[in-house]
Length: 64
Image (cartoon, rainbow, N blue to C red; front, side, top):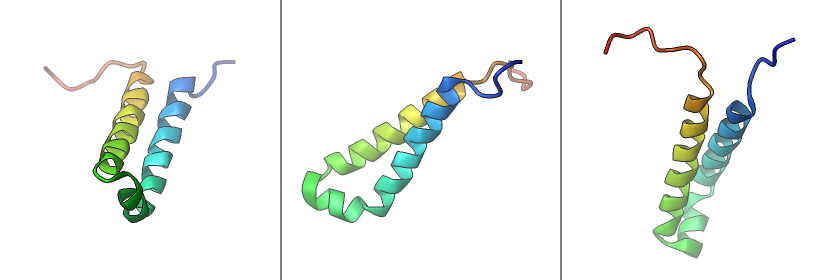
């Protein structure tokens, strides 16, 4: 039986979940980290999207 989602899918969702949680606490993180807090959020969201996009195993149906 084929696995429905790969590890990349779950890692991507975990990172996006952490990015969401960091948005809820961004004011406190900003006090602790300064502008690095926004960099942390961007890194989490970017890495999460990267892992989700690498999970796709079908080619795009859109023309180039």
